Length: 140
Image (cartoon, rainbow, N blue to C red; front, top):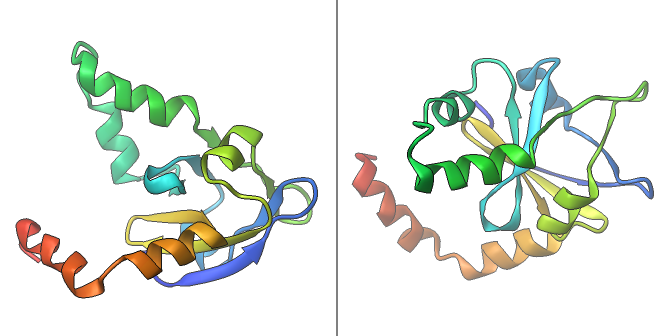
């Protein structure tokens, strides 16, 4: 399970290093794609419940397929270079408004990558107690 948050930077060539704590759980192969709220999702390629559920969406459910296309069209299997860095494609940088400082956020079964500015704004605008009330609908 992915927990916690870690601050990093991307370099001038749009490469980043995944925090060691997350990298260990991600394994050798992971996927990066567009996420909700203008962040990126970083998912283990193997045994990932989100990717498995997406694969099960009926092909003839045209409305649901819009979401499948939006997520998978921007997805790529991350490849680390010899120094353990991953290149982020321009499309994903634009989606998440990432220019330099980033925050990796552990969210259970996935890691989210946020621009530092967007993460700070999200946190300042989110009332923790009010946000946790929505969990009641899921039996939490």
